[in-house]
Image: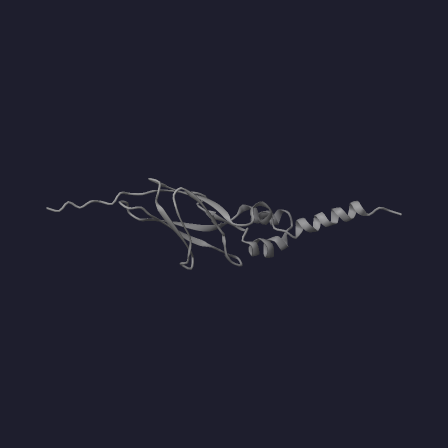
Length: 144
């Protein structure tokens, strides 16, 4: 009688690899984006593409944000900096397709490319990967 356990294990590993997405394997879940300001201590409010506030904190901090909006559509954020005595500043945070998403082509992961990575949002990364915003002092007007 033959022992088919090694072939069965190899088949299970192959099916598992082909049914997951490369980007999902490498970096699934929310992305961590370090946020800082010069000077530090600014209040930062982050809004998603629908205008909903998703986070508010004081610099420096690390934002944990989802790169996915919908199936095959990445999220976009507005990062708004406010500090008394300084002009408000805004930084767009956009999703971009991860290079790992195209790894599905090389490894034959059609399911990963069409279903897994788009469904999990792993096909996207957020850019810029970190934010360090310089704040400009408010101009003072001299009245006579």
